[in-house]
Image (cartoon, rainbow, N blue to C red; front, side, top):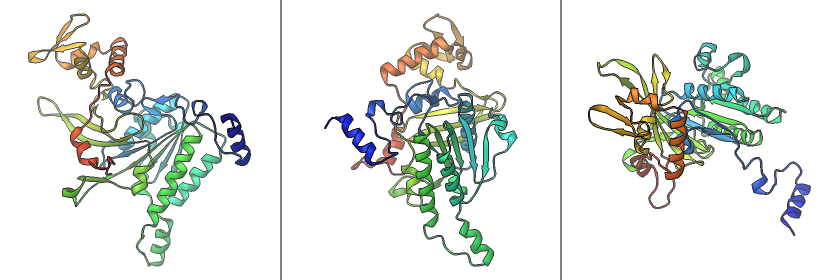
Length: 350
């Protein structure tokens, strides 16, 4: 039986199933990416400065509180909105507002906002999106930690609150399965957020673990850990935040790549942050003592990385992207990789 005849046989026996020659499958093929607000983060995610979150992908953002998770999600949704995606925010914490989304460039008049803390109702919402005729959603669930069983409310009303006994994690697993099904079938993008927790048994494993249950780490294509620190100038003034982004899991590029997202209080996200360093690695900028920089293409000299950043134009970005393709340059955090990857099995301990 030929491959085509086998395909027809399966289609006839199982109506509605997706079956195709792999090279012709629209589900197995990625043709569109949503760029993140940082060229260097795009590199960490895909090995390309201009790509970012692929269509039909699910991303889990993890970190402690106030580590840029919601803002990052909003920025990605704003870029997706410009590319024709419909943003849908499922807010389990009541944290999203019109002013918040406008600050990061998302149009509140052309997005759907759903406040829902109960996990079964979120499942019903995702099911309705699967059943709709629309495609190209970017769905943000913020956050897993804010979800709860509705039974908690019923028990609390009656004054008889019982232990969960794993019921919430089972429902979250069902929810994430639905979300995964939605983004793959609808050519959509999914982002959900969660927290990192200190591990009391740190001497026997990773110092931090991911919340949301085991499936929360199994379901996504990419897991990005975000850690925030203060950006202090030479006069010891706090001028912004530095967010370290590390891929703990990545199906599109080697995991444990790391970069820093620079968020200035005055100018916002510095999109070109990290590009001067990359240009030095690529040989397009030469760095000498006292911070002197030389553009090896034009021989122009300046003092200081901020002035050298002016050289990072479209032509330079294209050259840097070619450098990445030719060399496979990466910034893997080997220490974190050694901590999280089991030496015997090769499995990541999240």
